Amino acid sequence: MIIGVLALQGDFEAHARVLERLGASTRIVRTPADLHGIHGLVIPGGESTTMTLGIEREGLAEPLRELAAEGTPVLGTCAGLIMLDRDHLGVLDVTARRNAFGRQIASFEADVNLVGMNGSPLRAVFIRAPWVEERGEEVEVLAEVEGRPVAVRQGNVLAVAFHPEIAGDGRLHSWLLERAAERQAKEPA
Ligand code: GLN
Image (cartoon, rainbow, N blue to C red; front, side, top):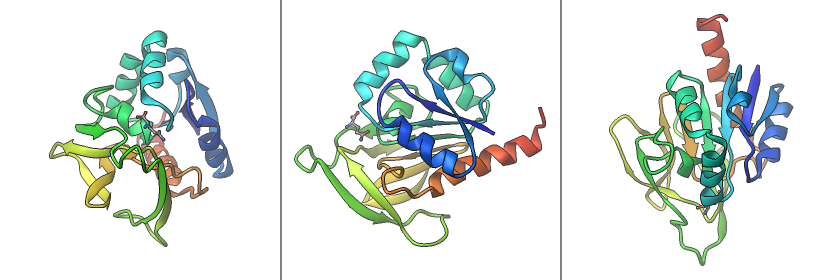
């Protein structure tokens, strides 16, 4: 199984390490051609304005939308959540609010319980994190912090406001791999 990691900017290497530890092959994605043949995609955290410019420059917006619309599992984290929202790629029916927890609180950690996730809470690192300000009916909220959605799912797309890769918890990446494996089993190539 090959999982793509969008690598225009941000902490894509940490995501690739978590995925490889879980037994996946990873592919650095920088151009539309890199999306060909991947079974899942991670959009990492970073800086959403820079990432938006990179996506425009490389002509990646439409190919990324198509990938998600075809049912390929996608995990977006932090700036990745912002990239998926209505104002950016429009893959998720949500509006993200950037730097929502306040610029002065540059970062914090919290134990987050996600709906459907087994075991102990996830140690989540929030770095100038967004939250989900508005959402459509198809969007399921999996976790909240301070009463604000910080983890949402809409079908094959999971997005979180925090960085799961920093604390080294692989459960969200496992979710991606499991969805990818299920899809492979249903639709053999
Ligand atoms: N605040 C950043 C942005 O708006 C996101 C922060 C992150 O990805 N850690 O792009």
